[in-house]
Length: 560
Image (tube, rainbow, N blue to C red; front, side, top):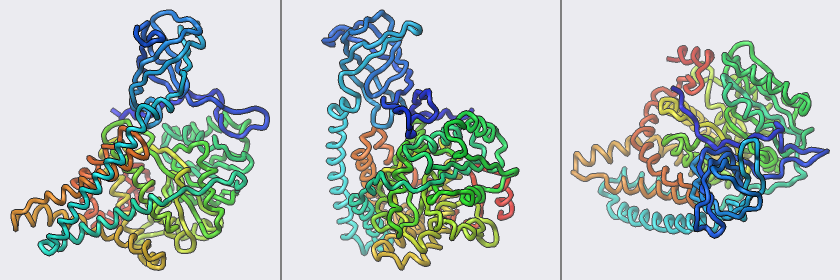
């Protein structure tokens, strides 16, 4: 039985592309509406007496439509009490709500009553909930740093008792705290509405029938000059209904977008990298934006992601990737915290030095002339004589960094579907670790020429994960067996560093998910950490894992 993904379900607009610029009429001005299966209690205007209950049909920031169990009248002033369940609205809105409202419309056809809130939900949560989250997170950060200070003070005191463990701990502390420090200095590139270079979006897809329509809609539904935006979808020999869905969408919106939306289908599967390269060669825009086939752009994503490229020294930029299905289960909740910290902390810190080491696949923008300079070498890249079938984003980033800067644009947002089963997650992580190892070794040949602090951080970021399994074995097995000393300090250090990530997440996102960073860090320590050893032993393998295809399977068999 397949996993049911949980995420906010927006009520679709009657127009397929409601946010694109229009010459004749204004587009959607109202806030987004979300379907809900929740219940609501309707109280008298003074909030003392429950008048009726009802089922929520849909709701937005400013109001809701319900199906009440008693008749209401237009103009009635009431107090609504309801619970916003996780996954009903965007992250941070999950909460009990008590809002004054009035009946503004009755829907006789479905027996519904529409309410307008006296103040919107955001304002309500800001006053009743979010400001307390922010205060608690700041206190948590201070307490966490205090705990880290005491632990590392002890580490320095006992340094000569076990040099490998305590030296590793101090280096790891320096690396992680430096990431948070530089991330705090990061600011997104400002938006110049007049800077709108021509853009071609390329979506490589394979067996993505479930999500491809939503991906296409996100790419075309941009607040960006329509005559400067082109979309090319390259179907990599899908064996499901992906191509049929694409053709249906193209026919549906042809009158609105015309030739700006192009589908190119490979007769048989060739691999994601070849699909990306084919799309890039067909592109006509000054900028080429790659978007994964299960990633969904926000209406201002393209306008924001191109802004850093006003500087001719910058060859590429990447945006912020959020987890779309974060509310599905424990695994996706942990990944939500990890993704946000990975982008807002680690990529933001790298961007301070104009050296983001991985322009992530869900949203990455390249100067077309820079991309074409390296396209052939990147497309036909090999390892030990075998074609490279993954690590496309990190590999292409390395090519760009040899001649240009690569940066992070926090305000360019996309949402992506992450693995919600552990088997798929494990295989994805193994693929990523092999890619990270291969491309980091390649980057190490030129990274020393970058700004000194960036270079030091890069080499530490490469060395620490490789050494981590050996340090953990020493701390948890050798030292207790040889000296009878249990790794309490090591575990406490992991806990406090995970709490630093969690409290930072709480401060920035004001979400109930903040605490899931702690189990993820220990999950990494006990499970994912050991994939590093296997990646070291099998780094030449090229099987894909999360999106198997005939091409990837063939390569996996050739290298096993």
